[in-house]
Image (tube, rainbow over the protein chains, first blue to last red):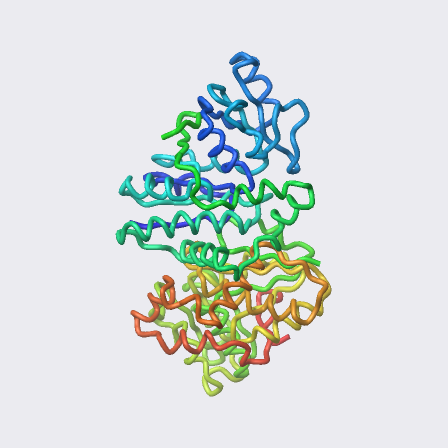
Length: 238
Length: 238
């Protein structure tokens, strides 16, 4: 079986996902938020592309049962309950709720991967759990890095590398593409300190905007044992 | 000014290149062949997409004045003079000749970049010369890695990294995208031995097919002081 990585989400052919298991990653911060929210008891997450869709969906579902979150330009959308900080999605805020999310990159990437047999929501936070779930499917795995503004984002490579490394260590059945090998190398380099994520665009931008605590949170490796799965437009625990 | 890298050639928007300087890279082996051929005195190189176009073009130009080269599936196309090994394009073979080339990945990538203000042909072999030429243009630089079979090829990342590193070392005027930073890190890792290109798909495949000497040749860093430039369908020394 093969593991490949689409290094950013731009003009991706949806047919690439057919017959494969997909893991969608947007470390900073969409899929990290989703991982945190599901681990804190959110009943489901519904990703929507446009912010205005979030408001109308919440009204139709019952506003009090919903939490609306996400960002544009890294900041909270006016009228949303929360922005795109995983630290906001606490147990008291989301338990039993429907979380409706619209973000610049991650929610579009999830939509791009929808022809996959299964779409897992991956992050650094749940790398081990996602690796185990993906490997157990016994199929080719195609990881989609969301990227930032239709360009490569190094943080996504690192999380992809973490997941791929854990799959490789648990099974010799997978052949790694060049993109997969590069991601693993970048993750190893992050861990041994030879690659500095803080010099990269998105980390630098978030830090400047005051979201340094989010970066620190999102770059924790394998601290949440939850695997969110996208199915029929909703994300729930596997 | 900015340096960015398109990490493989698939569904690239040609408009991305408008107003920018481009460097097209296909280390194994198209742009390495082009670099070698130009350094050995080829009058010009004409890339063509389809092998049959190479034959008809050679006939129209005068078959004796031309050398036809390239590959499909890594091997020489039947009827071509040469395959895709830079070692074939010696001075005695190419001096004063028109080299017509058709390869699986590199020639298509050159075509994809044609809206750039200037299209340089880059490789590991001429990294320093290409870096100096690109930096001196005083514009944003967009490097296109050809990839292999519409997927990421780690050798292209390494050559891109070598070129970007040399640009960065000679000028503080350029801001590196995440993709550019990743490429530089991969090049550094190749040099210090922490990343093994021989485990990657294309290196492994070429080695199995008996082209190990080509890999060794193509991975020499900055040993040729020539900058091929694509203009109006032809590649010549800058």
